[in-house]
Length: 465
Length: 105
Image (tube, rainbow over all chains, first blue to last red):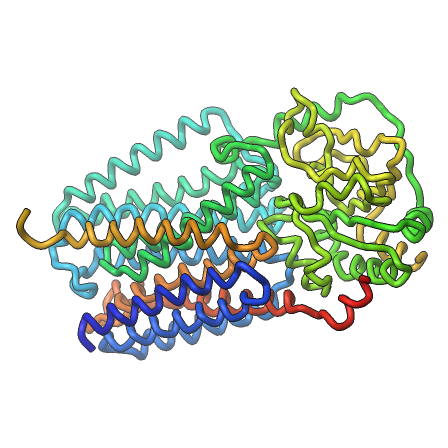
């Protein structure tokens, strides 16, 4: 196989990757898209295998890694998707670092002349530090998402902040770049020390960048790390002069960047305020000062009666539903309502759940038809003409304070649940949401609170219907 | 204006164009599929496995090729895991029209 054949095969693979993403524009074409992606990967791997001299070690590694991956993919619960995705980002990051190490060790294996030219060094430096930050940052994100904060403080879902944090990060970043420059200027002899120190600092930076970011901002963090893992792959592609890697990496990089943007917009927060972190720690104190107001609470039977007599019901699922794994019970409840002639729809806020689109997957898992599920922009105008809204474990995304100038979440786009004729809210307690804000929706005359675990309450609703 | 073009410049051209393609393709992804998008992009970025294969396939087994093999294994977890879990999720989005669709009306 000549280099031209390889380049052509890589081009085919790149096009297939683009088609894979294009397929996701609609649920009907998405499965075919995924198939394109698989074929693209197969072409890329087989082509590269044909170039190598000893295949045994590689095949063993593929079988081992592939078996682990396949097993995890089969066993993972849909509620655990955010953790899984975070863990997978970390693997891409680590792979990038390891490849960079191998390149420094033996450039000739990659058709890079030794001593390595300056251009390759610069690209390798970028690929390595982005990869290292992706790795350690994703490990922290994984710990936060998997709720490991009890065992290890750095994994706490509350922001971990200390004095001078940003200054420390900035200094570390400067020192890291300094060693990067040393690596760039070094010859074959003096290159290891700066390379290793630079990588070590990048690992540390990844940890420090993610620890101050609170649980509510996880959808942004996970999208951002998605983006980083793409840029790391592209960076390695540059240093190996591999256009397929550059294309695949850029696709993933821009995908993650766009998702981060969408998530930030949905929370009305600037990307930088998310990155700088600390949200949900200091502000949390404000809510405790609120005066005692009375809420109307009722039983699941009351709620069932109200819904059964409604013409239209909109269900607003939030993270509480995911935690309680109540999606199947919700679907059963909706089915009963539909049988009684009630129109049932679901309204999804972009940041509902712990990652972009998480709630849609949970509802799909429960076999809720996707034409009953609506995005915020499509359903917000419908709340005014809806009889009952059932809010399940959501808080900030239905907080009318977002319409009030001066409130911390002012300007955040919300689901207009408060415009419905009756609002039923299921929560475990009156505790505030991640933004640490009280929610006036709970105190409205037309609102009835149903306290309890989402799954328990919904199951009671099913029984009562 | 003589001499060959620096390969880095060609790479840069590819990079910039790919970012544009990515930008336009991703904005067309329906928000309902953002989670599968993340898992499939995860699998796609694991095409970094080709770099790992080159490292692991070096003629002599040394530190570099062992590092490469580890990278192959890590990337393979993602390749298989990413595509399979995406497939699993997308199966859930299959239209179950006959039953649910009719009852809704």
